[in-house]
Image (tube, rainbow, N blue to C red; front, top):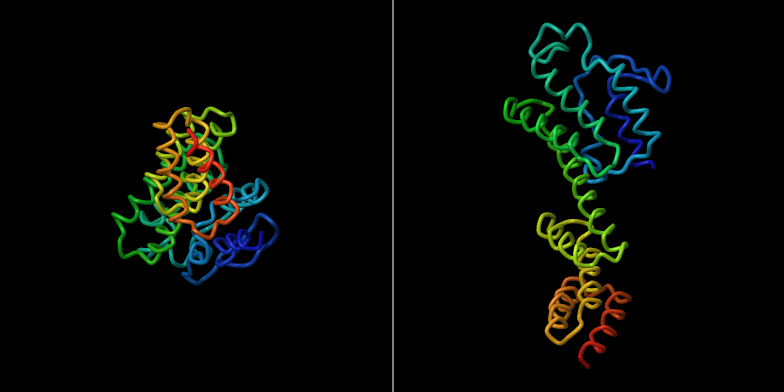
Length: 227
């Protein structure tokens, strides 16, 4: 929770809370630090999402005295940044439809293209990382849902696609382990057993310290050798 609450620095860096939903303006052009500290965590509670949406409605990006310069409240750069951030906040609810997430990524990529030297650029890039991680979580969730429903053929397709799309994912080990389990359950003959042996070797090579999982997979390995 503490790490996620740091996200509120996105708003309080411009002033102090008047209450849970209202912020004052700040005179300093300082940008959000949450994404520097943890851009890879896509998880927010419903309460936090509600707070962020309400705070965003009351947030003025800059003080009025800056409105005349290129970074002013009404500048094109600031409007595009605000639009991208607004889309990001409204994409925080986790669901299978990630249309809002893709829209936010598209808008923020437009910002990077148009304003590569903006002082906001690192924050924008970190927000994009966070959005991509959210899509990654969705993709794993879909594959795992088929797995839990024992729809192993579909789960196998989705897990393989997941690893291909997200080769460095934090969920990769879980995905590969479940591929091992699926190929074991589908190994009705020696030919099918080869699929298990292949992913089994990959798993123990990549995750040699996962002792409990390897121990279980070894029992499957010995069992399939008897086919």
